[in-house]
Length: 188
Ligand SMILES: NC(=O)c1ccc[n+]([C@@H]2O[C@H](COP(=O)([O-])OP(=O)(O)OC[C@H]3O[C@@H](n4cnc5c(N)ncnc54)[C@H](OP(=O)(O)O)[C@@H]3O)[C@@H](O)[C@H]2O)c1
Image (cartoon, rainbow, N blue to C red):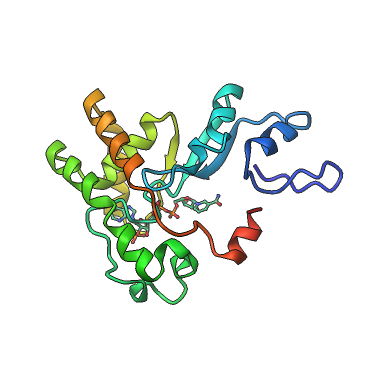
């Protein structure tokens, strides 16, 4: 949602369910875009997802691969491996010890993907879809685009959904989602 209207004082970015509700008198809201992945489920507990569901507003999940962590072959062994202009250099979750602790989170999901015979990214995306979200993964590589697109054909069984929920609930990432500068930009 990208209101930036001085007269209504509606914030430019959605940061809470309150923002959606305050916008309702001024606009028909079809969709919101917010972060959601097996790695970042904060909006399950702050009311944003519940409010969107109650109002019939579609939830478009950005960074559904956890900014690249929920994959078989993460290309980086330390924070120093990120390109100088990579956004993740600014994100506490990807810095110092947090980088190594959080990287381990994907290992459990990898085991599930191996058992199911598909890519870890596909499990991660199928899981986001199974939660009623529209996932928008980003990639600069056409092969990965095809792999991610094919996650639409991955159906998780009831048992696999339970397994994912267990993994997700047990493995909360360490470190903030944003640096102070970026956090202020999106109203945190
Ligand atoms: N509204 C907002 O505030 C906001 C904020 C952040 C992001 N977004 C949007 O959300 C979308 C995706 O977010 P994101 O790019 O931050 O995170 P993401 O989709 O969670 O992860 C993207 C990262 O994963 C890698 N990747 C993608 N598919 C892969 C695969 N199959 N195997 C291995 N690696 C894979 C990509 O690297 P390669 O490029 O090397 O493949 C890239 O580094 C973008 O369209 C972005 O514009 C919106």
